[in-house]
Image (cartoon, rainbow, N blue to C red; front, top):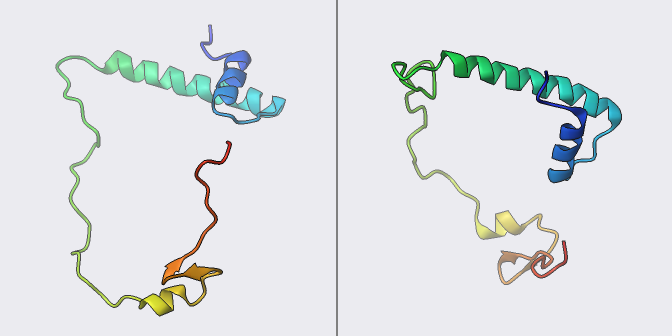
Length: 99
């Protein structure tokens, strides 16, 4: 029997604050059920003698060196700002508003 039901999907949608249509609920029910089934299959294979890995192949750092390059001046950065004050971007206050 499936662990994922349409009622569970609707409940998850409410918790995530996502409004789901009936079609989306039906679609997600099948998709989430397939995901849960696949996780169960992986769990069956996992045994204590198999080392856990985060990636199937070794990873290497692919970041470029952190070198200071040409940057914008303050005037250039603020040139297209809709509002500015004291050399800074000026934005509407958001703290303290009701959510």
